[in-house]
Length: 390
Image 1 (cartoon, rainbow, N blue to C red):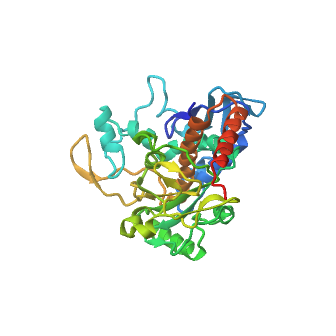
Image 2 (image 1 turned 90 degrees about the vertical axis):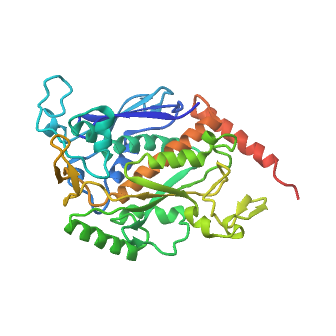
Image 3 (image 1 turned 90 degrees about the horizontal axis):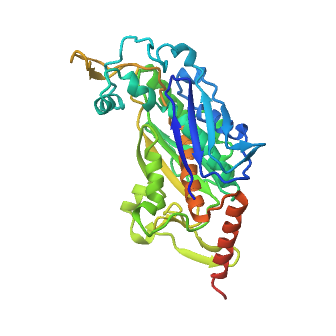
């Protein structure tokens, strides 16, 4: 049994759609559970005009009855409020209005490679689907995964640790209670001093016609040891998490735990010593591994960081080439954000939730939530039997 999803829809089409498979029967699920995360995705200092248009809400059209999942595929719809303004341009039927095609690709975007791959002459056919608008559907899927994980005591949070050249310094791994109120920060940062400096960076970028990127951290708490496997490359959970994070638009780097800093550490500092007592079971005092060892969760907090590059759509555009005439011209401009790192962190939560839900479904199976829970409880009991006896 696995957990999988498929999304469809264009940025200015009628709606986004997601179909989620592998959701067990008997799980509580309401639109409000999903809408909460959709609203959080729209937060963040530096967002553009599109966020003033869209008020994302989900409609569940299949797989749920009476507030509980049926075990069949769950279908989710998110309407695009901007669709009426694009009805003629983006019509599905033959005879759609054909405005002047977009022929100037943006450096750093999917525009040019997408044109070359599919043979399109109008970049609109590429940018509509490659737009980060698609991540709203993934956040909806992630909210379903989050509901499943919550039944096993797993919680997921995120926070921003860097925007532009401003980074939080000396921060230790936060506890869940510290992250509960992070959405109250305009940039979703736990350090108030750094948050103020980040906002200044965003303001300066807006004035200069620039965009800025940054780094966010996603943490999962309450995981049991043994999700994922060391037995094959594709089964290693770190690789799957890395791929999921890199699938978010504009993400160019991912690290787990101490990540790249491990390269400069001696082995005695890079690895987390193991201890045991009967109340805590096996435990570690440090978490350089970020909760993953040998491709598997080890019971500690899972810590993932991702680097987001600056958004490639600039109000002061870079140089490009008109693919129709071959002339050197400024790049195409679309409505865009100055900084979307706080929102990308919420997408990161969704992608981590999806991969963890998949790993949980693979390990514990079950057609119903009760079945999965029984297998989970049996696994914990088996581990307890193997504890050292003093």
